[in-house]
Image 1 (cartoon, rainbow, N blue to C red):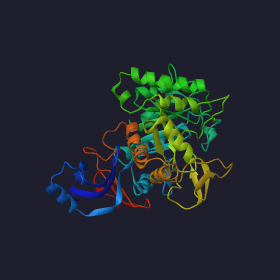
Image 2: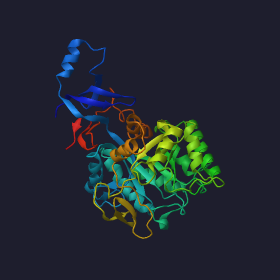
Image 3: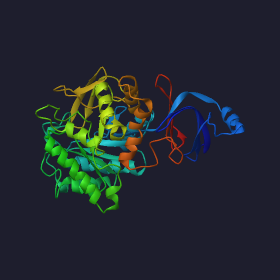
Image 4: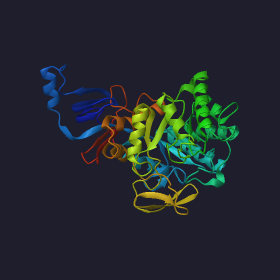
Length: 409
């Protein structure tokens, strides 16, 4: 392995695009990023840099997906072996996602505990960044593609079982705020915040009142927590795939969506969006970005086993899914059932169909996930961070991926 190397080409940083820059990597860490045309360089330094071969592609930070169920024909809800689960991360890694959180759908508690224990092993080895429990404490009326037979009311003891099984690797848990026990004294949110886990509001039929009260409570809990792990994540709470799996906005029965947007615009919650051009119309993704700003949006895939795979039949937890023309739906009922895209495709949709600037679209697919994880070592191309790098061609095809400075086959 070459411990020191340099990459030259167009570079997307957190705040700008460098048309001709050099990324220097030293032992898996970005040592520096230099603009070849910088006036601060001496003539000799500039000439040395111009001797480096220049890629025709664009270098992006490794993408960070904090809500992913599967890919490459495998899923975290249905794997039989750890190698099968590793196939999910390999599929997304090859397409530019260098950090991935494994999401589990609603299932019997014993099954969730068993899967969390296995996924904790993958987190120990660094294959995944953590675990997201998308249920079982969600609304039976807004469970989407999840099996309503196993949806249950928020239960602190069951939540403790899940967190214990995850062994510190639980990142977030989706909750419907309107169901008693979700927030308030002695609630699941108290347990999550004390354990350094992010509450994520979603799969909800909540009124505007419950949505606002839940977010306020989570923020207060985070501010009051004296447990060092309580501040270990970067946000007080998130919204699980905004718009999808929740009561829609209506002027006389507003539900939770306007409250989520209001809270985000005031610097609070961070809103997930599945920017694949299917789950949310790209113009609406643009509108949310313009309303709350890039600092309160995070792009996710909600990807299932069908990501990177042809149309056909798949399984998501206990339910059967059929994919036609790249759209996954429940075989019985036709409800949309997760994504089939890689996160890089979401960035492309944001840029080409939503008209979001490249820098901000990349930011929402990299730095924002890193913020949720509470990590300052990933998410951007800047000195001191891990050399997680993606090189994409003009047509968005992947030309190269590096994880901790190591080239990915």
